[in-house]
Image (cartoon, rainbow, N blue to C red; front, side):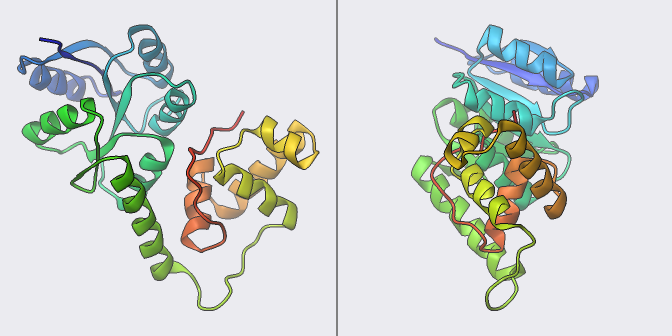
Length: 233
């Protein structure tokens, strides 16, 4: 029987070991290794190529979202289950847009986590207690965005704080373009693109490109495209 190979990444040794002990009891699963920081995690994922990685959102050096971005960009075969100390639908949306296959709270019941791992290993997606295929996930993402937009956007035409050039850069980010690709399309330097992205993050009060996209989508300033948001270069 082919076992589901796993990595467990968390900076709390007791939590890591607890998850490992639970998973190791399953005859169809095998833990290949553990790590406590983002850089270690990425090295292990690249070298061992597990079927699934259980990845804490908050990690030193690189956070879980950044690692997920990199795994997606590198087209690695590993599927990511992002885990967090708090269950928040907005963070789940960030995780889905970053390329994660599942998202759950760290207080999840062991049997629920085991079931989630098996679903993810089979190519499914698990968000908001729903098991979905790729098409279902796209619909779910759009529903979350639309729901948030109804809740938070101002009536009428919403004001946004970005310049015309910053809006052009943001729309390219939504399309999944890298800074180099944006520079080529807009005819500006790579550094200028980076400056615009930094300005967008500062104005929105967010930490990364995915959060900036979600922030803008909620307010109806941009439209969702069928592509992953790439990390900053």
